[in-house]
Amino acid sequence: MENNKLELKEISKLFEYNFFIPSYQRGYRWTEYQVLQLLEDIWQFTETHNLSNQNFYCLQPLVVKQINDKKHNVFEVIDGQQRLTTLFLIIKHLQNLIRSEKNNFSSIQYETRKNSEEFLLNIETKENDKNENIDYWHMYVAYKTIDNWFEEKSKETGIISPEAFIINTILFKTKFIWYEVDNSANAIDIFSRLNIGKIPLTSAELIKALFLQNDDYLHNYDKIKQLQISYEWEDIDRKLQNDSFWYFIYNKKNKIKYETRIEYIFDLIKNRKFDSIENHTFIKYAEAFTNNDDITNIDELWKEIRNYFLVLEEWYNDFNLYHYIGFLINENEEIKNIHDLYLKYTKDEFEKQIKNLVKKRLDLTESQLLELTYKDSKIKKILLLFNILTIMASREKEIRFPFEKFKTESWDIEHVSSQTEKELKKEDKIAWAKDLVNYFNSIENNDFCDLLQEIIEGNEIDNFSELYKNISTYFNESDRIDEKHFISNLVLLDQKTNRSYGNAFFPIKRLRIIDNEKNGIFTPIATKNVFMKFYSKKVNEIQRWNKDDADSYLEEIKDKLKNFISEESNNE
Image 1: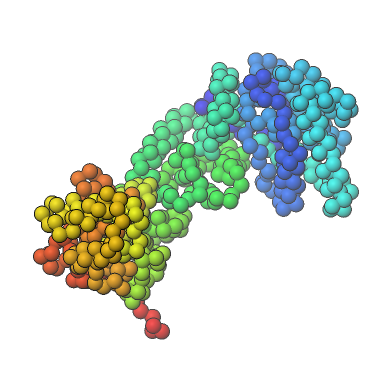
Image 2 (image 1 turned 180 degrees about the vertical axis):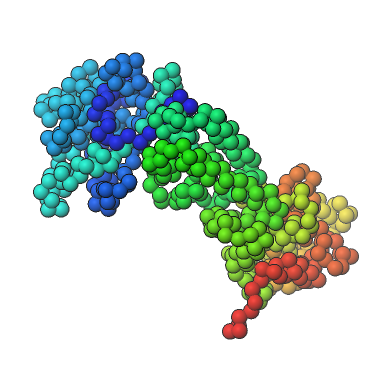
């Protein structure tokens, strides 16, 4: 990496070069659609940007390797040859307007097409040769598409010469990400990685090349400083591989997915959004390098990255901030907003501001809490915060809420006391019956076992509703049907466990939670407390969930959330 060179290179700078397309690449295959899309993008950029400032239109990386014939500036093209050839054809159309000793790239030679150099240089006269092979046909169609586009653009806009309108953008404001690999690199291996494996150069790789390359940007750069950046880069990257840290700062709902996690830090600093232009973050850093070759400014760029990461690490290592900020990030609070508060306030005041953000995210009064039911979108948020605050109340610093588990598994809202037999299909009835037979056998109660065995054997019984009602009465779960959808009867549970026991009664669910604990399956602490009846004031009926249990559980929720519950409005 350190011997590779990376820079933004405007199209006019390519006129001095000759390009060689090796045989391991396929031929030219861009369609009219792709050619027109490139032209329209450049046109739109010209219309919407002031060409006197630092803005530019950025093309995808052109990955090249200089061939040992340095005298003639020949570069083997490893990646980006489709765009390169298309730009050659566009400039071919514009060549009469280009005032230069050279008005195009010196040449492009496809190894598999011996006469391709001459064909491209004289393509305007090659209509009779276009059918000689499929590459020539696509090149000629692309060239005629470019001609026609300029003609149609003149009619559409009334501009006499669209060529004159767009030429400066193409020559000086359109830039390739020029990535020149070391001469010793294996070009075929690189091509395979970038194309066969469909793994593009990431922004992180490109940004790393900016900081660690040996070229004009860093000609005075202290080698020791480079080594320091390299070491600190690897340290950041290594720490981000810790899933506990990563899922603390990264929201699974983020539409941007990262192969290289350090890229997320760069995106945060440069405020990349899902709809940002491709390579948004790299372009921002490349602009900074292009406009600043001062070693001090480059050092400041790296310090910004390092310091931003250290702030995230500080939050992660702080017991309270870890939990509050982890909750906020899970609820889509932008890290930028949190970071702005961090820079503005003292540590104590910052924590107060964070707690205020949590309260705003909850956006709930006590009366609203009591009215929430099963399908309300706020239920999961409330139960998550309740679990987090339960852990925080323990003050056991080594025990922390595992956001990595919460964000990598699917979670349901589960009823503590079961719902109704109407929701049970035949296969669910069989699973339901198996659990109950095992339970009743374990306590040597055979009152229901014969009928349950009939269900297990796949037989329909006429009185299933009556059986369900009788067992429900046995467990005291036939009462308070109207209250079963309120939060006093709801817990947070992983989807796999929840779906596995459907409408099971309380003691069956309790046994499943105990089995999960034995097998190391994560159960949120408050869910575990409910089924172990830790909140209940009366524990004489450990196998039943009654109104007193539900009321005690609700009081615990209200107590834990009291600092985050809003005051009642006077209008309520």
